Length: 226
Ligand code: FPP
Image (tube, rainbow, N blue to C red; front, side, top):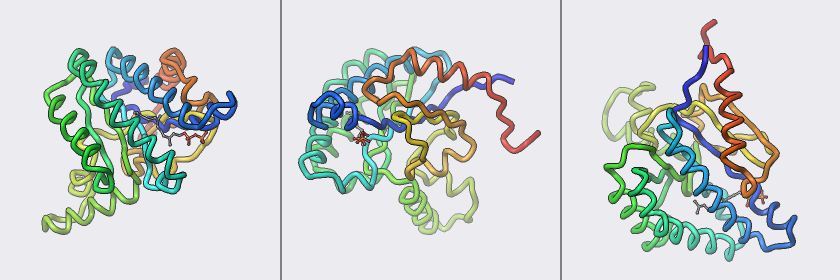
């Protein structure tokens, strides 16, 4: 049985180490990491089966980083969304953000809302950024919404109240040698295949992703069956 990859999730790890190894500031690693997001998204948009790619860009724990690094990441995100809009239009990419956005600045939230509205009709690839995102936080917020709706508590109804209005994850890739989920997409990863690579995120390429996808395609996913 071969696997069809529709939803790819990525934990982009190793920007800081990449920069430190080169004697650069950590922020240079994030800048280089943003270029990798660009290259991987273009690859996914051209891929015959991938429908969505979800990147872990900022976790609920990332606020603990030094203030200047957090501020740099916020500015980088805003600039990135501004710069990418033409590409999203040209390549028919729909942009979507998940997570608790309430803690971000007005200008970043407006940029996110604008990019989502402008790309809402695009249908080649859904490009999701998880921002101020935590898997447990998402489940708690969904449970709250379900209780408010008065609907019956079951998997299907709870699933509909999650931030992610699309399918389960088929494959999770994490870079930089760490082998943890780090509170990422806990609900959606239930039956996902996992792939880990030692490559640091700024060095990750579409060619390496292709090799990982080939290996994934050969795996036998049984979803609890035999
Ligand atoms: C992990 O590397 C990376 C992050 C916490 C942030 C991810 C952000 C980017 C790739 C750039 C911004 C993204 C966009 C879309 C503009 P780390 O800093 O934890 O690295 P380390 O583990 O080596 O310290």
